[in-house]
Length: 82
Image (tube, rainbow, N blue to C red; front, top):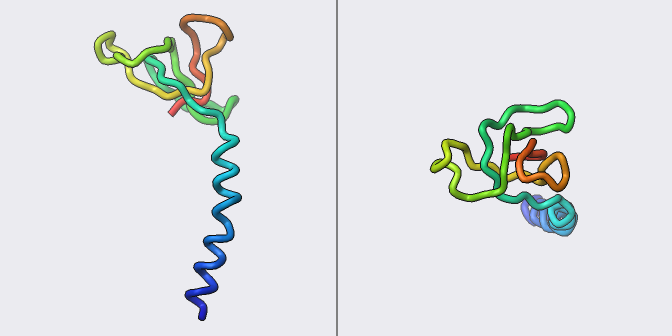
């Protein structure tokens, strides 16, 4: 009976986890010189990032970042990177 209770509890939390994942901002591919830990904003930031896929060709690393700062720039700091 405890096993069925555990399964029911796990299944009841799935809708909440799915809604939390749906509200998380999506990341986009960037090429950065480096990824470093950040305090504000929390997480990782990318140094000298630009949108792109073919990063090793230019000697950079691939990152998935939420946005680029400053807004509207071609290169800059990647915010919320993985």
